[in-house]
Image (cartoon, rainbow, N blue to C red; front, side, top):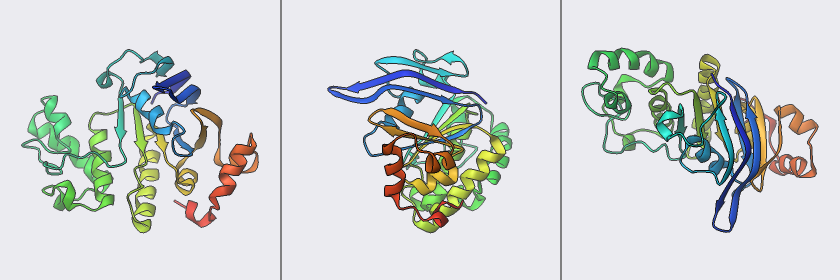
Length: 252
């Protein structure tokens, strides 16, 4: 487990300042959820941490080490995208050839037996049934694709997990089910996780703390109950009030 610290982080796209002098500290093993209006810089922040974008200024520390100049593969970070980014032409899992789950291990030249022994407990933990192994992503439900994406991310034993709106394409029953599975997975692994969503029910169910982002900066970072009861600004108060959240929706 490692911490993630952003100091005065800034990213511009032409005249648009997507992230503006942002400061954030994520504790070791914490599940932190970032919420905010569309275009406030949530996804860009994740992409900066992952190394998919380069900041114009400011620093990113992972485990106390500056990573601004480190390539993606050396940061110990994995990112799960909104569309899961699974390889459509590959099966879910095949220890003999390239597949969605085995590819990262094949690239590292792991032998077949080692891959099989590594993946067996992981697929069981994530509920990826053997009957799914020969299927391709388009033959899976949204919830099943989400489990495969999480499994692929875990094959590299990341220190930090980044999740960008992973539940947005799921129908309500599957959304609740997979949300509960994410909570269970985090409790079992305590992997430092940053999770972006526009859905406050998801944020309240998942986040040990929630970071409210506004125009590229973090307006307030606090425990969910503090954000609801003691908002630091009118913006935060109005943001939660405008959600008209049904408390039952926040149950994992």
